[in-house]
Length: 209
Image: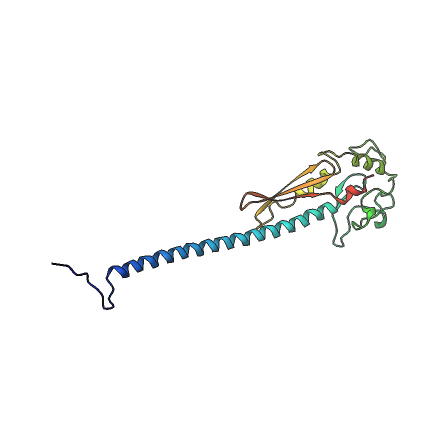
């Protein structure tokens, strides 16, 4: 006797709706996986954009530190600025007549190199062999090594900056290169990859004679 396969009221077998259900389940599962992947990629892209923006901001901060490197006193330092944007060290225009610094304004070319000998300085200015500020800085400027006394204060000041800055997914490493260059390497801590390498020459280097 031939068996007949039960059919529903619409003429489909019971198996066909089951197959359709399985197919729909597979399709919906694949769609969910694809949407999840898209969401993860979008999140990663947003994080990457944020990291790049934060690095750009930090580069501007480091350049700002480099802009304050001065040797006008005979000793190279990164100047501290007051609320008016002027350096806090003694200078001729701030009323200290014996100072070798003509100005404490970092926007002036005279901010960087000694304009005269400070007659009150009688001892040798370390690490040079001269007691005259202009001569001492000329000696310092002649050192283009990775231990340059001109660049070391800048490296120290950059290393004193928060690393990494709060809430930002990168780290910063700075090193002096030959020729008065500060090389700053940024690592993306999300992906553990080098994101940027920046070579910074402080304005002071341009005033070396």
